[in-house]
Image (cartoon, rainbow, N blue to C red; front, top):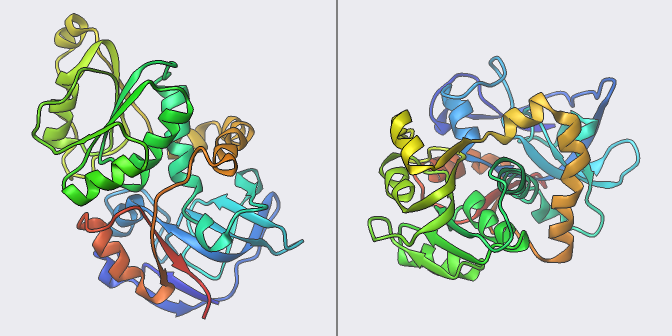
Length: 306
């Protein structure tokens, strides 16, 4: 099979397209003939060595859509790694029914939808009628957060994005308003921050008393500078760091049991993850470099058809 391989830690340009033996699914695992694989910022970090990952050499990629090899059923799956390949294996608990979904696109559905759903509903405890502010509102996770917040009953959703084009996209995803970074932000009950850096400080200051800031990443390259304990007490704002990867690893049973609720939002049309372009496996270095440079809109996909 063809697979994209990280032979050393470094930039995406160091990745190699290789011919490898197909992996064999052991006990409790499912082998999948991959149709599409989602490209995520965490892949960039893992390839560079800045994020924990498998020992070298390894095949990146943590979400795919395809057909189970044992019975041909359509599935979407979350992986530990190995998604940038024609065949991948996944923990059977993290393989979900994809009947009725377009497998050429569904490789980009699961991770952003589930991360937004578990983050908003279970970590930040979004309540119906609350207001939500989403940083990086045109990105894969940000655009999913806009839609999931709407589906969970948010009264008003405001997005922040870096360009006019991206703000238009955020509005198309269901945001009531889209603002540039650096502009005065409206008071809000809940912030979704996947950017960090200076953007965190501005969003934190806009958070109402007894509000929450859901910390899901730092795509700016700079982690948020967290306020001092006493300031947090006096302001009454909760900081909620959240890693969907850590939740999957620590409580996979809960994720497996609850994930179908989130995926049903896709089937119902309430959530339709923002997808960008689809690319052949050989283009993985270029796609990842564009993602690292924040030069993409929506989730990018790799396809496996030769």
